[in-house]
Image (cartoon, rainbow, N blue to C red):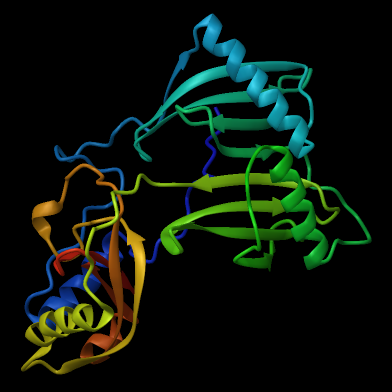
Length: 310
């Protein structure tokens, strides 16, 4: 079995022991910052959830999924397998369900994998044949052009990339398109395309979360800053640490338990519009934390979560 982790998008908050250590230091310094969420993969009972459960697709569904996967494979220029296998997957770690098609060569070696969500939309695709050796490597503009054309053929709408950087693993490029909703960025959501040095597509991954309705009325950035300052001051007053608010920016964010232990174990909620307040600690806290982000709900000014960057 091959475990594909195309959706392991970077998260500033480390849910494991490092975060517990940092939080403990902040508690000692500020006195009131609550424990962060439990490490990924641990259930309320303290047991590991099943990482992956597969089941066969029914004939009608399998036919549709295989057809969809074939069109996507050809649009991205992936290798055609001698055999194709379709499965329905329940991923216990990502808490996601999707249909997956694997392309196998004549020897049974995996050549490519494609995944689709419950609505039939592409969520991830990757080719696993060897990275080509080429003397002439494609440049940044060529990589962006190749990525844009290929994902358009696969039915994805993209505009100007948010960022493009060299992929040190393959010698190619990684092109990113951040997800926007009503002109506001969705935190962590994006379309990411890996381009090989010769310009062929190596992978596509898409991260999208459900969004709540935008509030009919929202507070301004100044009010959000005041909310954050009030909480930060109560946390840091009388301690050998301080803070500076560096930025307040509107984003769609996922509520979490970063500053509210009562939310630990809660089901994932739709992303909400919030003012993300980035805070630079000083004093003792700066020895353990580089940045704290507070999510201030744009509707009512409550803190609905945040991130801690070590």
